[in-house]
Amino acid sequence: MHFITGLKIVLVLQISFFAFIAFSAETGIYEIPVSDYVTGRFNPEKHPLFVNLSNTDIPVARKNLYLRKEAALALSKMLQDFRKEYPKIKIYVVSATRNFYSQKNIWEEKWNGKRTIAGIENIKAMKGDMGKAKAILQFSSMPGTSRHHWGTDIDINSLTNEYYEKGDGLIIYSWLSKNAQRYGYCQPYTSGRTGGYSEEKWHWSYIPLAKNFLNDWNKIYKETEGSFLEAIPFDGSVYIKELAPLYVNNINPECQ
Image (cartoon, rainbow, N blue to C red; front, side, top):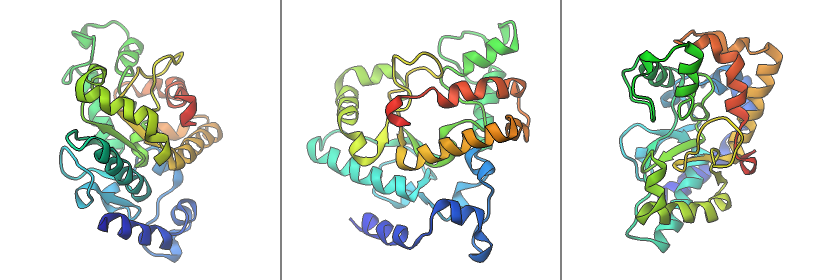
């Protein structure tokens, strides 16, 4: 495929993420602190290590979805191999990179009752902001804590677990559960974990990059005692230092 060949050439020429991000003055292309990267405080459309999925062979539900080029390359190969086995079933990306401000919008719409929350009829009627935060955290991250900030994670097809329990959804989920790791992908939010986000059968993460960003996030959290998360306030952000590590780190062990 033209997309794969082109990306291979680009990736061979690129220097490592850490050198590029931390010492980009010599390139004159882009400069961003690692703390800003792992909290999504940048624009993926302008970041040279990201690709617009509309410019690849990866099926998408809408325009302007971005991923890291390495993650897109692996995803392209994975979906090609899936189509060889199931040519009539389509896997497509409905969400990819979301920066801090996109996540802030999602979070605050849920916080203020403008967006529905599974199992919650009226969040405004809930007593106590901690309870509101935990209700939203079933399926949505606080801004600054989402894996979607990193350019490594995708949501596919349907954002309901029920879709993957029968028909095409079951075929897709069964195939990914068996094969995704061959391409570097893993489901971070599985059933059976002791806490954190609820199960998300639609959410898949490119681990060769994501594991490094997770380590970076935790390292900076420890060094700053969580203060790096307080740079931009949002509704309910008073709880971020307390709750964030629990949700960021409670993932499928196979994704670590």
